[in-house]
Amino acid sequence: MLFNLDKCKIMYLGFNNPNADYFVNNVQLQRVNEERDLGEIMSTDLKWKKQCIAAVKKANRVLGIIKRNFIDKSKETMLALYKSMVRPHLEYCIPIWSPYLIKDITLIEGKGFRDVLQS
Image (tube, rainbow, N blue to C red; front, side, top):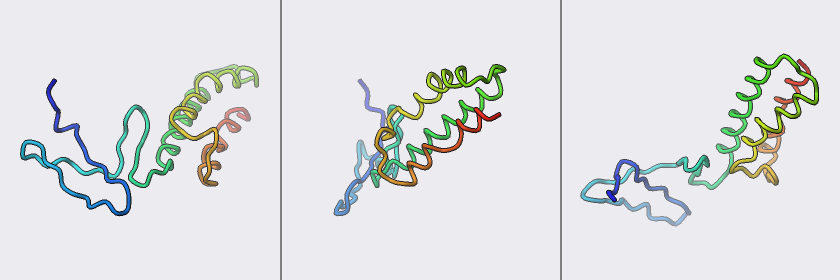
């Protein structure tokens, strides 16, 4: 198997890291502050902020699709659509079951679903 240097990147973690440059075949590897892998956004500060924002944006897009395309907006229908189409985006690779920062909690528990039910 060939080693793809374009896809190889370096992310430095920790405070006392010397941030050394790495070379493979005389090609310097790219430095990054965040990287997306398997749907999860990993950052150098090891915080979930960008992952939470991305998940909420995706869930809000799906809520918009539901709001525009479904005529029956009864509570039972909207709840079933929410559980099957929106909630998985909020639960994948995210600490939604136990967020510890207030700003992440308010972001995840936003008003999106309440707006769809009311319209």
